[in-house]
Structures are given as C-alpha cells and as structure tokens.
Length: 295
Image 1 (cartoon, helix red, strand yellow):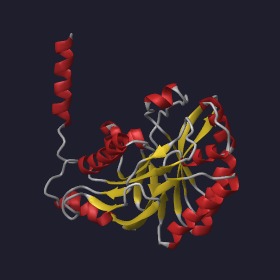
Image 2 (cartoon, rainbow, N blue to C red; image 1 turned 180 degrees about the vertical axis):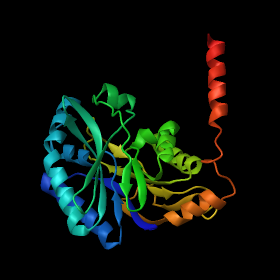
Image 3 (tube, rainbow, N blue to C red; image 1 turned 30 degrees about the vertical axis):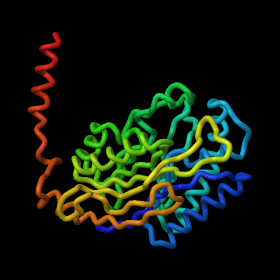
Image 4 (cartoon, one colour; image 1 turned 30 degrees about the horizontal axis):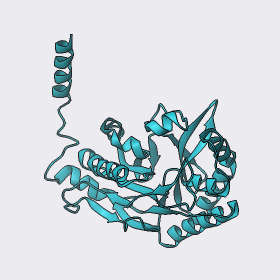
C-alpha cells in the first residue's frame, strides 16, 4: 500500500475534574480522528500526564508512581479503541515502570492487537535529574504494510545520527510525539523534524501538547506546538516540505495523506539526493585525522 492518512494531534491541556473525564475526552479525540478518515493517529508525548491535574501536587517520584498505576488501563483502553475504530494509534508516551526504573515509553497500537513500544532514547536534563527517568538503549524498527517506521520522541529528533540509523535500516516514516512548553523548545523540535526529513528523504509526523492547566504541576504546565507532517523540500513535494500543518497552539487535529510512491520518486528523481550522496569514507577519514591530531 502506498497511501496513508495520518492525523497529528495538537492535544489541548485542560483541567479535568475526574479521571473519567480524561478518558472520555481522549475517547472523543480518537473517534474524531477515525471519523475524519485517519489510518494513523499520533498523540503527543506525556499525554497521560494530564491525569496529574486530577490529584494534589506531587513530587516527581510520586507522579511517576501515580502514572504507572494507570498503565494497564491505558493500554487496555487504547488497544480496544484501536480495534473498534480500525485505526492505528500512537498513544503518545506514558511514564511506566520497567523492572526497577521508570521510563518514558511510546506505545503504537494496531487494530489486530499488536503493540509496538519505544523508550525515549535521549532524555532532557530535566528528565534525567528531576523526574528521574532512565533512557532507552535500542531503536525499534517497526515493520508495517506501508513500510518501515520508527518512533523518535521529542528530544530524540534533535540527534541526526539516530534518524540516519533508522533510514539506513529502511525507515520511511518517523513518528515524533513531543511535549515542548516554550517556543524555543518547539522550534528546535520542529526544525530538526524538517531537517531529518530533508537529509534522509523520509516523512516525519510531529504532534504535541498545547494549552495549559489552571494550576500548573511541576511535571507539566503548558504546551506550545504547531503539529505537522513534513517531507523533503524537493520534487514532487512542496518547496517548504510541509504536507500539512496545524494552527499554532490550537486544540485540533491536522490530517494529511502520505504517499510513499512520491517518496520513491523523490529519491530517484529529485534535484538532490542527500540520502544517497553521503560520503561515509570522507567523514571517517576526517574523524581519524582529528583523532590523530588530538593524540
């Protein structure tokens, strides 16, 4: 299959008076995407952290424990929704316990019950020191009927080596759930998403949190995002490399169609081919030279 309809969420943070209101609001968002024809919905990083608004202020450690207590319900709820709606759902990320540590884990649900997981591989200073969380150590290459995908969560997209490693293993679509609470953070993730699409000749789909809680929590306060679906800036795509983009900081879904045959055309007939025109021998030679000079 060549074409895939993707919904990227600008998920609005808002006060929820109860846990049930959180789940019902999430259900509405999922059904809205399905009714708009999405094959795949991408929710943001830390989407379940909205549940912290139902509770008194917590330390980071207690917040991790609380969020982990929702893991079974979260997975059951999304898995059932994916099956009923016949839609793949990247259900944002969720803090959960893995052995004796807490991780920031993305879950991708398929209608047939399959679940793919990806721990965040690069943690921000706050995630390392304040939460604290543990980073993942393996990139999951996900096989689908549309080709190979990978999940790079927020800060992960800022490391070109990771996306290049994915592309070298055949990944054509990078899913990027994010949470950025300032314009600085957002534009780092946004411009790096577009850079990864250009240099690897792949699609990148970015989602994020927007809005704020009336009473900010130490773990989550406000979100800043303009979700989008990005391509290389070359034939047969647009000059800007933007397939679809949302309205800044609005609680909404942005829907776009990804055509993988166009990506093949880009790689074969584009004006430039940065994925194929790399010179690894030159880069290695330069690194070796630098090492010798340092010695």
